Length: 629
Figure 1 (spheres, rainbow, N blue to C red):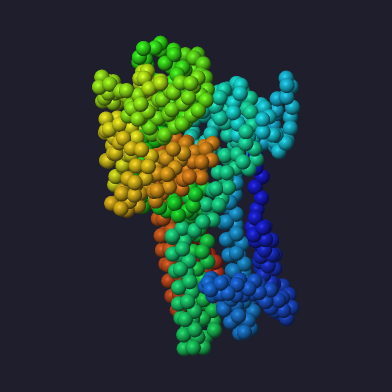
Figure 2 (figure 1 turned 180 degrees about the vertical axis):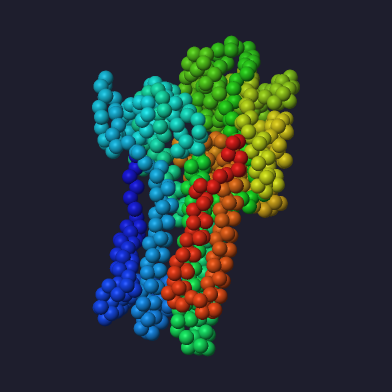
């Protein structure tokens, strides 16, 4: 398991936090000594003067640094308030202002660390040692000493320290930490397992493939951590608003000082209108939402994508592997002028290196029949069309009938009629040609994913107006799937390059679109969409890299949950602005009425800072709709 270290900036900030804590402690002691006369008046005054000057320096330095970068920040308002206090020799006020500012810095860092700890809590209870099988013995070694190729023994209750391939045994693996699935998944020989998951029952021997920071789990944690630092449009708007607001506050304070010459009034107003709570609460909302999405089994690559998903009105989806299971099963074999076994051997040789779902179905079918497959000498595949290989001086082609025709295979009208009947029934077919002679047909059927229809319905409850299905399958099959699922528009018989062109057309017609695919075969289409969602990304580096949002499992049900989470996050951000606006208005009135002076204003600001921040933290605990689906 990886050991994530803090960046240099994070470590430096932590050191400053310790200084802030020391400053707060001494300020509390100094103010208490002054209030309760624990020290002689002169000693108490000198102590407060020293603390006020020490506390003012970092605030002024931060404000100057921001101004150098042409940015207006909350530190500028605080610096002016502190400088006014020092000039007016209001040591008591300056000390209390510093107490407020240092406490706010500590709380801001605390909330940032809290969000990071929520992410890194995924690493809790990580194993330090593991058992590896050497010859016929089992050795206990440190996890960091495991090497690729080692055979790791995973017993009941063990957390997996590596990504790897099961080579013996079987176990019920709890993958909730990665995929959000509540039920354990049975893993047996030939299945892949991932670090961070837990073997709830059974025992396995796993051949280590990926270690440390190369594991799927480590990449997920890094992605979530990095995504939580990215700004959204909402945060950018907040930054611009705060800058504008600070400028207005400075102009207003200057005008009030010129008109009244009342330093205490100006100080009080500056302290009330500090927007440090907004500066903390908005990023915290999106950090919490991204972390929450990870617990639901979705990796959102940046807060901007989480924000976008709730505003999407058109969702484009592939069929195979998205709306259907993507695992077609062989239903019939029709060889022509050769035995079924020979036909299957030829077909298996052609499909050996293909990654297409039907190729996997063929090879699985051959395995169940105990038919050995021999490797071809040459291999060429045209995605969405077919494959041609050379094997023992024979040219073997498999794929669509029109592809075989292009390769010189004669297709009769009767064969085309058989294909048409199969399409009408909702089946898919792969045809085989050997040395330009038609050799037979194999028939497949795929199943719809459970809840696909309900997921379409629920996304429409969140504002999606249309679902569009684009598929390379035939029109009859596409029409049947569209009707069963509730798809509004479908386009069939497409090549991969056709999908990209259609997405471009849909963007022109409907505006922003989201595309759901598998992240590998649909990489070009995903890249063309405004928001790309890859399914079944666990263990697939390509899928995680290709998509804006990567669903770790092939569970469509996560999509409406993400839309709900996005809407909740945006709602909380709006609430934070309202809370901030109302408390500021109340504070300004209390200052103008003479109820609050500088110290009272500092206390008021500090206490009300907790309101929007506490509101933002709700995102981690809030209940999502349709959790039962």
